[in-house]
Image 1 (cartoon, rainbow, N blue to C red):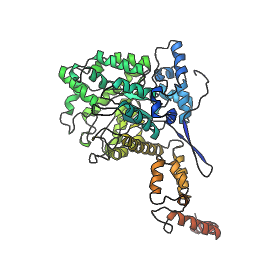
Image 2: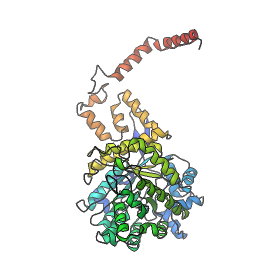
Image 3: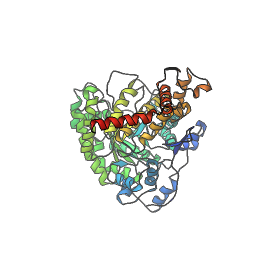
Image 4: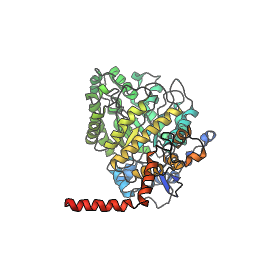
Length: 511
């Protein structure tokens, strides 16, 4: 163990009117106290001293896997154990064997450590970032704030427009959650948008630049191999990954193997130096139901398994990105094959969307698939907003996407039997049955919306204690009628009579 320093982890306390308190996992951290005008000052650097200690003793590998394999429980691991209500040694073991990752760049001291693995709470990621057609730096930092307010566990900056470096700097200095990027986007900007002009040196320079800033995990499409590209020729939607299409174009232009694959060892050196984690990208993921589980997708997955082993040999953490668009009956095959080929490295999936016919509602089509794939063992779910396939999401779209995925992740935790997952459900159900409206609002994932929907028809304060809502009114509420029935039964001693009757019937039947 590095030290015995005591610290508090971010938990949100919900105080109920019956005197009960509920503490929930909290992602907003110190950002909850920030105003937009404070963004240039950043947030507190809670990991500053932990990192300085490692630098002072000359550590050259800053990966949490490196420490875990040496039997060291780092401050970050202890922090995560408290957040997850787990034993610190269990956290260390999961990281050491590669079944979980703790993304934490040494240059992101503002980070409040979290863990991604199938034996922990299912996490969600929110994507933000500008495009060539709009969005300012301030707007992107505000989207970060907004995403973590509603529960994003990590955020990816997918900026492709102007001021990529400066936008990322502002985001990192204000982020209590891990930040991920796709470095090939900025590398492409450096060669004026010409994919065929990319080379490994431009990419490594970009990687070093972003790692130096503090990016915690990189999506790297090193599995898009030349031999897999022909498998996409007859697809309905071809190659839908931006990174995948960029590298496929480079491979075909030069008729050479993907330079991210051939120079993977050089990439490993940068990752090790800063403690950055891999998010091995699925550049050949299916972009339509028709293309799910094809040769291109699963061929790339096999290569990602090979690259995972190579990264682990250098003690570098890895998670594997997954689809995409997959019908419900094919979802489990994705998880089973990923666990087999990638040795149980954490799976991180985009949805998947279970149908292609609902533009404008893809946060719903994908949340259905996300709940299922999370139940089957996926560790982190990448959100989809209502604007998917249609345009750049705004703040409200980000909120809708995050809430949809918080529901999916929690549903998966319930299905997996995660310790403590059901407690919040039980508290809300009890509050609902007892008509404690304010407690119902407080325990919901989106208290503001729950309250506003209730108050649309019953805004008066006295209605916050009413034993009905506008759906059924005072005479048709089943829960109110049940309470009256229970009271009547108790007064008449019917519960005891019922038990006697049941016992007599059992005796008569010989049971």
